[in-house]
Image (cartoon, rainbow, N blue to C red; front, side, top):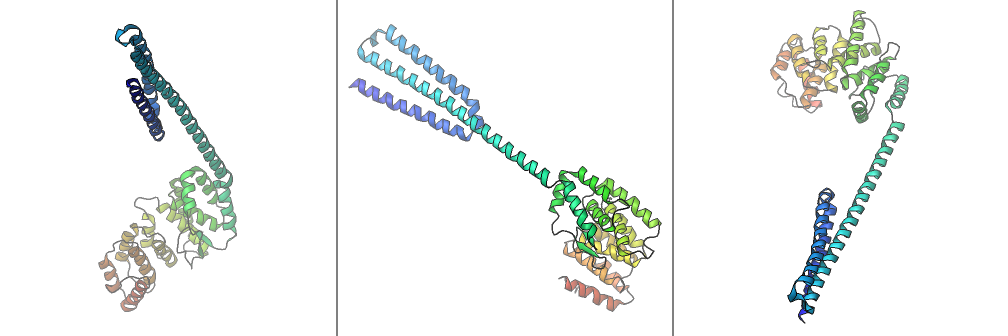
Length: 358
């Protein structure tokens, strides 16, 4: 009866030990790196238990006289057997599980690498920058308008919005800037169509490709020296030259300095209108200072009231703070104060702004 009870207790302990090993192995599945570091420790511990069990069984059976009876021998044999079986099962389970886990991880890694390689190869094959820009060049060269990345487009300047989203350009310029620069370099050659030059300068200014922007600056000043802004050139010729200068000014510190200086100094109405339209497309904070400088030097008249009002409204809608006193002073100094005020108030209301303070 005593032997059976002891054997039952040992069987229970053996079961608990095996379940503990199983639970720890399952936990190691969720932490493969940690399990890998602990595997050697577990293996050494289990081997130690096996050797210990064999040694102790021999010691008690051979050298200890009070265990020479049947009960003692049975007890020692059962304990030894239990420890040996537990050690063997633990070693086998841990070894097998570790192998299976490593093979599974290697298999998943190989599948992931293959999938990524396929995606990269497909991307390279289908949408290389040259192929995409060649298609754009073909489309742009056949359109009768000037394509721009910005909105709204100048209706009077024969512009059209080229794309509803420029996310693709963001990605391709970030990933392959050298290829894009090489392509755009060919677009700004003297023999390129005006609308292709215009789109190229839009891209150069948008992404501040300074080496190309410096070339645009050189070309623009060369055209100015030929009197292009004073001659009877069509809108295409005037627009791409001004856009070249705008692209360069995007790379300046402070930004748009050249554009601001030209706005204040020019007497050309078309040039002034072109520059005052820029804040509507890109209401950057630098334009606040530029327009304040402009209003210090120039009156608001019926000739420029609409352009000034829309530019200021665009900056206001973008959340920029404007010096209201400068605008009020410019209105007061106007020769046609009432007519000009009505134009400005009407435009601000049209754009959803509170014009009562004016």
